Length: 330
Picture (cartoon, rainbow, N blue to C red):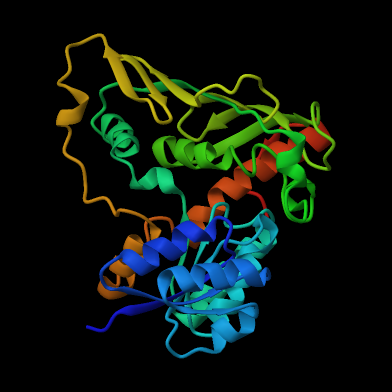
């Protein structure tokens, strides 16, 4: 079996994707692409691959089988759709996009081309997040009543001004829920299932930007559980992100980078004794397995769309000051 050729586009966050493609057995980093020539040359020299400033050149290469998109969020799905239309597999860094219509465009392109579309939510490559899923699957907490998500991050004005300033614009970004918080929206959906309705509020409180830097929402899951979601980039000092799940038999607390604790009414075995599935090391590892075995990617297009739909519901509710029911249209 020949190596799978990768092209990586956008060499800010894409530096990590380039490294993964260059160092993973079975993958071959063919070309890197960035509009900043210096960045492209630097990564090409580092990994011994070709470089270009032209996305169309990446898509025209027969030795590129899969394209990783690490450009600003509002470009993700459109570029992925172009790659899929060119016969390539495609994956994006999170989120799949900031517009549902663009997500749907990419999903249709994947279906039409019979190629894979995936989203890189790196929490799915950690044992801690899979342990939470297993605790819930095994029913340790019983019926879940309440989920609290608290994401209180700090970002300076300089963070938003960096580079072209895309992070502060509605065209390429949407705010703390869509950019930073989407990691944890994805986890809530993975762990607890679909959201039925949302009451949301969003505001700009601490930065000179077009987007929100503070959101809060009350959600009702299809299971009947309630949720409270808080995201901000205006907190000082920054706090570790935490998700707390309260059920009829106990409480689980997940702290990003800090592990998982479970306290139940009845005695439970150690959480690290839970049997876990095989976990890909990262998105390139996951794409390789999906391409070579025919299984779906861990987070395919429709799954990646769900977190976009949730933050869009938060924003829509904030605009209308009304309860928003899901699913939303594209």
